Image 1 (cartoon, protein in one colour):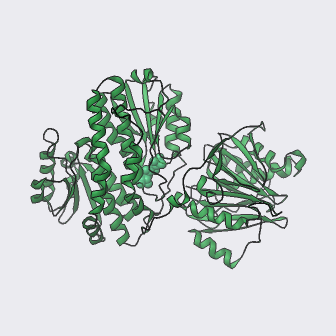
Image 2 (cartoon, helix red, strand yellow; image 1 turned 90 degrees about the vertical axis):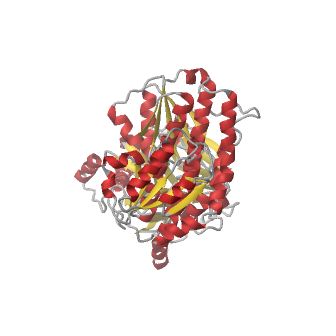
Image 3 (cartoon, protein in one colour; image 1 turned 120 degrees about the vertical axis):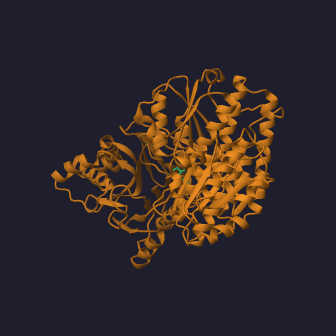
Length: 630
Ligand code: M6R
């Protein structure tokens, strides 16, 4: 999703002042690359004019353009990485977009929903457009207000007032940053439904989609509220609402180290993040229970009495986070006996769901900015539901708007494909389930303590899988020519199978599907032909009922039709060997907790196969890390 950076510095030689805007903005854009993008651009104000450059493709294309056509030194600049929505990823559609005869430049993250109507209005006034974007319409509107309504008069509020008036007309989701040649030491920004953070420097100030945009310069940040406008100069940060009334942001100290966002010696962020998983699970478990094994989820601000009245849970999430939700459903229903549904956020509010004050909404989002999930949570709140957010990004929108939050502590996840956040989400969902069971008396304290003890052993078990990754890596590399891979699982193995398939689709761009193993005979088995690779997530033979035996039968069904079976099984399960071309063993663990282990080999497999194909595993094509449009 689009990344945004803004900068204003001093020219009088004060502390920290005088950075060249181009350097600051480019560095910020580099740090925001993880958000995913398909073009980039930058504008600076110097010598009474706006100078801008923009290019489709990765930042290196923009840098080559800047080498060929350098920008002047400047103390004020804005920069953007674009993830295409309206109009393809072309040079023309890249941001910034210019208006007011080239004196104003604007960048934007989000979608202006009423852009078509505004465009007609502006066309009728004789405005011409160079791109297909909604952003250029916003730029033209801002330019028109600045020039024709305010007469370009600083005494009438200048760019800040123009931004307020423009925002009153815009519908949808947007973060906007604008600079104007008439006000060379100012960046004005607006925020509705899309993220924006201010970075406070000394003799300089910053703007970013998130703190990564300026983390190299300052740790002091101000989180903007909904529908706010901020005007930054080198010395001041002024916040108002869309109508000009003074407003306040929330200042905080950024407590993560920029080094933690680096690759730590691995060839990719994704590989590093897979290896971060023992710690991600550990950190998520830490400090959540007392020495007697009693869960103390202090951050859950919902009145425990209210949680006791919950008669239904709906988990809302998208993509990998939704698979974490599927795992949560098995655990929560088993431990708490509360009916639990899992729904893709974007499907939820359009089907008139049955939600009331006894419904607990559990949203799961790594970024905390996924627009589909945010909108679904807002809808549920309007219906009176209580909302808990499981989230990895401190201070992001979804937890801020929820009644309560359970942060995962996986650390920043940079690779677009989610790995450590997934395991941390599942861990947090288990904690929530156990907490509800404790509160409602569904489980004895001793039982909860035992499950927490089993969870406590998980990080070391993940580490054991990682220590033996060579075998699965080798298999991934050897299958670089595969055209299609299927994944089967039952019970909690089903969401694991779907996650395994999603990782392969995302990273290696090959057909992959995850199925409930029992569903195979109802149709998908027709896909099986000689040599078809099929991964099977086999439950523990020590587990419940005849689950293990049923899955072994499913393996036999596909093998009989020529499938090449690759099995993830529990250590000691010698029986499966007879039915598999390859077996990868994971340490013993209770069935409900097994997804925290069984997922890991599938992540490594997808990473190895995609790397063997020469693909960029950190930034797969067409994908964005944080999907902030519906
Ligand atoms: O930030 P979120 O967890 O809300 O993101 C949800 C999905 O967009 C995300 O999990 C996506 O499916 C990833 N690409 C998975 O690797």
